[in-house]
Length: 597
Image 1 (cartoon, rainbow, N blue to C red):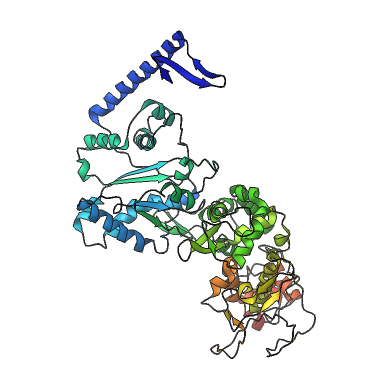
Image 2: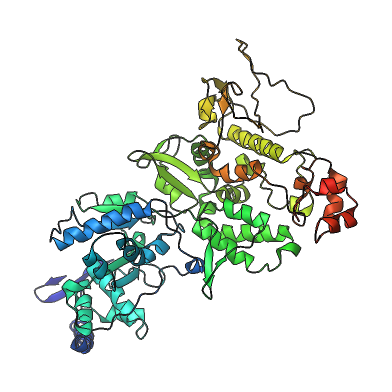
């Protein structure tokens, strides 16, 4: 505070005046700093600044993967890009015409990677637009990748204005190879326009002819929320909150759910992950989540030969690494597990702005900010929650919640020659699907209260239903059937019925007469199975196993091969071909022909 030329400051003991000598010392330091700034700025302004290409925003192993364009991304971005340029060229730069572009999603879902690709994608998509001026404008853009994370966090003591914070990070891109960030932050006072003017001066190009991409990463860490200072999510609520009084047009761009990634080595496109049944299942279990797939890759680097790997060690390493990368979920723990799991499995419609029923103010952003769970919009602010299978795996091993403690995550037991006791030896491939469906049904029974009345349409959401009925829920367990249970469909007024699940492999077209109650087919597969859809599909369409990689359960799924023959095949690995397998095992060739060599 300055009153009558005397500087005062507010301390714990009230307003205190600084002594004259102290003020002189501070004034001298302040003047020296100003002289230093002025001298440095004069040096820079005299010749301008050379433009330096930005570093990648993504600093993890996934930065080397080939970019996977999100579904629907081109349709959204290409149209908005053309409109943006058209309005700018016609000098129609009203905020309702010129948009801000946002990538909003949970942690580790590819926001940084997608943002880094925007200049390249703009140039690529412009090729399909009949506008020579737009193509020329995008040939050599000036791109700034600035971040409020990864070494350049916001310092409110030094950075008083948003324009200053952005300009300093732009300078860091241009000077960072010769000047440290903390020096840049203390030394310069500038605005983004100042930086662009210096570039314009050095490269002798008019500001009017410069195409600029300003990409801001980690914006959520710069948001100030008095009600929740620890809210660092990049989902919808904080963004909508600070834009709530603005009519600025905004475009929300999608992020990708990744498939098995590729990378280039010496110009050749290569698979990131090796071809192996267990690895393929693990890739699917990651739910297309970038950070989870990076974790899987980082662990597999230490396992060169999967044919001699102890899969118990491998899976434990993967789980430990995932728990470290997703420690936020462990902190959240089982306090959110029950309501979230219920919403996911019942496909309950939720509003992104309203707390979930039966929770202490829990909202969509609270569970999607960490990644692995995402919100699929349907209409307006409403939609569904879904999750990666690996989220269930992490929570099962860390939360201690009874809901998941009995759920079997059998990635590797069969690789060690152990069978699942609830799967009878000799079960065919399609019978493994039946077993898996039964497991899911047991899990669904655990997320509802004992005695709670639930409709079948809610319990089996997504299936084609012929009418509806309500049941009184009770926790189920999985047991092997020891006697035949009637499964006929009848019209009756009896008060008690048996719920039967059947997986049918038929050679003719399916018709309505075959299934009188409910039906699940390829069109509703993902909706019905949700986070379990990939695993269920793998069980449903399994092909004859590869001889040198077949699991105990897969081998006993072949007619004529029981426990004894399955163990013989496993004990005599590896095999060069069918004849080699026959010579080593003495198992009839007509049975071994069901394996791939």
